[in-house]
Length: 223
Picture 1 (spheres, one colour):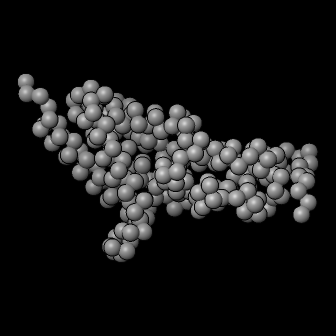
Picture 2 (picture 1 turned 180 degrees about the horizontal axis):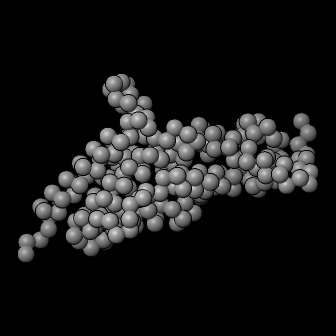
Picture 3 (picture 1 turned 45 degrees about the vertical axis):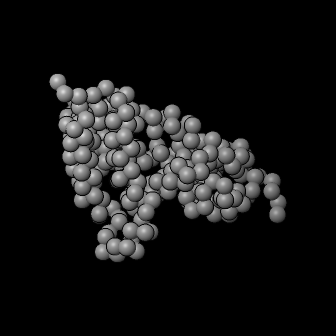
């Protein structure tokens, strides 16, 4: 096979090749994970030769990092963490929006679903790309969640109860993604698609709010 890349001088052609590589890489990384994905398979699906990844991204690691950045950008552009909720909205309303947005990203039927699948693998087998993702997106989103949970608990944001409640909220959301295969076998009547998202979001929000308020009442120091 001739591995010499024929890039030409047409910027549109280069951009199209780069776009196809990102699209193919997103699918392959979502299916196989970073470690098992191969540049050969990515280039095959993109209709590009093996030198294309090095030309456009440098190496497989840089391509993966760019796929994560592009995937998260698209996911959060379509479904911002608080959707259309105003900055001065009550913390309970923000929590509901956070849960709904989280599930929308997980249950989206389009290419955005790849972001959830890639991130699921990233949580179990982190790569060097996780550091940048934490700084750019996950840490700010976590800080927002910590903030309005602390407001509901009426305690400092660094109180360990706040962190534990946030773990529980996110855990409920990701459960339906990580355990989808098991749930569908145990309860085949339970839909796990975009149409099922709204009732699940409402349940998680109501369950979490009730738990947080009861937790606050039982753990707050007597005055």
